[in-house]
Length: 389
Image (cartoon, rainbow, N blue to C red; front, side, top):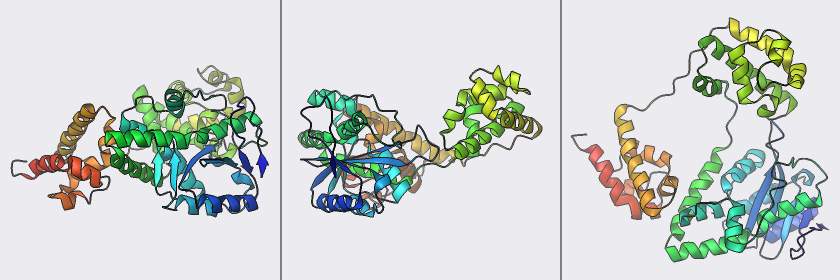
């Protein structure tokens, strides 16, 4: 266990750097006895196709820890801490961290406090961590290392200080927001909202879908042949990105793909003239791109997948519930999804609960929402169930 010297922050006690299994196990044993801990992760999403957790930061009320997961042989004890209902885990914007922890390690978290979600329930507008710390504590966080490759080693003192500060203030921020929620009578609501965040984290990341090329082509008014070319080079870009372990946008941007599909170049010189395509990209990927363009021109465009659309009656029910949610959010000066999720609105429109017991079975409608919105929701749903509907 090493002390990290954090320059330019003289009042900040250095963090412990955990890079071996003995210290890691000792720390996990300590954390299992803590009532509350702050957690953050750093990943390399801007630098790799297969993103991974590269750093785990943890803070208690007295100390900060930075864990190098690459140096830990058995990280399962951290999963036990995340699953321990006696330890409250504080995140800021927990959804992304929970997705990463589930994807890489299969971990599931319970009993979280999401400071971003709490701020949204309180009605804050600027809810980024930097904004919250500046507004509440007068602390200015640096953004210097926001886009760094956290998979690289060794990590500089400056990068480690940046990582430490991401969790150092989470517990004081949680305490401040907890009191504010308590004073506003929104504490139970917030903890119910945190469960929505956990549910999002459990969904996991999306895999590559070759049909996503439609999202690029349709808004850019490409014709059928251009769309077929776009599909071909869209799939090629993902293949190259996988092989090189680079994010797809670092192979070619979406805008460049659209321009290539629009121009359909047939030679390297024509490809080089396409807006957004560099000489380096022509050298590296030119032959493969030209082949993919030729294949796309000669292949019929596959039928656009048609996702099942709800019937008009169901869509009408959802629309009424959606409008209710929007109005309720305006009344309370919070974002609409703080009121209730879209998924819960669809479930209401589909299942048409008849009483509070049935309402409570809808995912996303916990005790607080049932008590505060249940009568209104049952009244709306009851109108759907009447003979005139």
